[in-house]
Length: 584
Image (tube, rainbow, N blue to C red; front, side, top):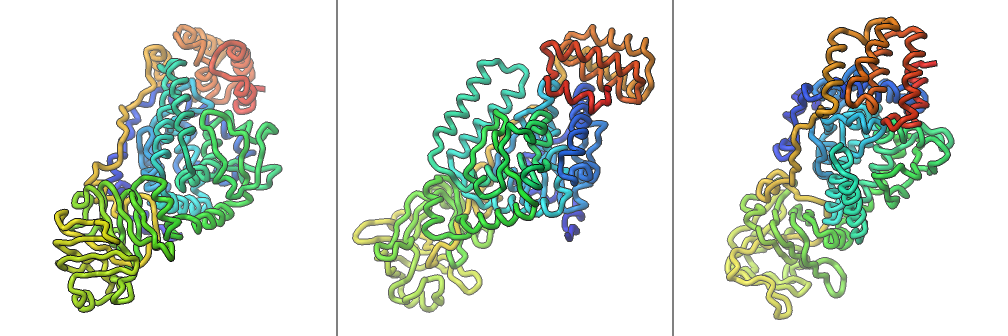
């Protein structure tokens, strides 16, 4: 892979201006001593499991992407490592809109949420956090075949048509995830958020391309298995960052299915363990199936089928004519030829932009067409060809009267012809009327009319053509404001202070005597949150070095007290800890 274009400039310099508002500043000072303990526990416990059950590239990828078992990584360090094989990393806060995430991914950038999950959510958190993004997603990028798949996926997802219902579901998922991660949330608040998500799903009246690709992403990059069906390995980030599901996913309670495009029609529930998972024989198969699905997408097929998807979606899409003219807006009206069934007229509503090869045409911004845009297309009856293929002299010979084979008639005074690559994109007319069978589609009093030239719509894709300028004129992506998050609370402040002191004293790197260990346990028990969180601190601080058998026995006895109470140490973790920490 030629990575020179990715290693020349700092990653932030490659982020387009309209995406920069989503970048965050990672502040290591916000991570508490307990946060680093949580990181070490998750990585240590997970690695014991993943040495046997994860795709082989995972362990190599941890080192290759700058992820340390010792402390929460800096995104800047990860970025430097990722750039060596064609990717980069940027820090973000919390949820970012799916369209934004896909734009980052299409650019070869991995957005990494800077927040760290709390000790209460060691096994799994529905909210984006640095465990999921860094230790889950990044290591598998070290595999060249998977990296190619993910880049292709980002390109496809960027072109996908999404619906207004997709946006509602995303907002509901985001809200539920944030609520579940917030320790201050009440049971009632969580139930209310769960109901809101159920209602959003229930209101989904069709499956958009974006939703199909979201499902594909879920069953591959998030929850994918690879290898033989009877004994697969884990590669999905959701599994690699979940101490719970990374174990259960390989058991008999989960149905394993051969990976296919069936994944596009298989829905998922982020609030529950997945009842089935898809197993791909190789990463190359992911790319093959994605390419197969792309052939059915509107950006590939265009025409009436592509336009119908846009009309149903009710979101901003781009309609590309065979002349190269790109019209970006929300499709409101679509008229078809009575004989051929081909599109002959369409109208958008709201801000609409006219572009060519991704660049907004001069004077054709979403501000100029703030209330929509309309145009007939097809064959001009007199010339017997589309106006896009006519010469300027041929257009002049028609004296401002253009009669289409579909029955549309455009009359006005030609101001100019906008051409690119020897094709006419637009004919600008003043005092213009557009009519068909006596019905008025454009009145001269409405101002200058921009007649779009072309015979057919060859491509339809989601979002505007010139995103930078369209978003500039329409207020940009809706950005969720997140305050810088810390897990430091009044309840855990004493334990954080205690652990910070022990870290400075190098307790984890020393061999302790029984009296020293007993004194530490006694001191820990004075903390208000000991009965809930003390067990993970004991593991981290007293077993960080090479403890003797007496210390191990002492810790084992203490852990039994936790596993028999209502602490955050689940029965599943209680069975995994002895192996991960060699407590035999």
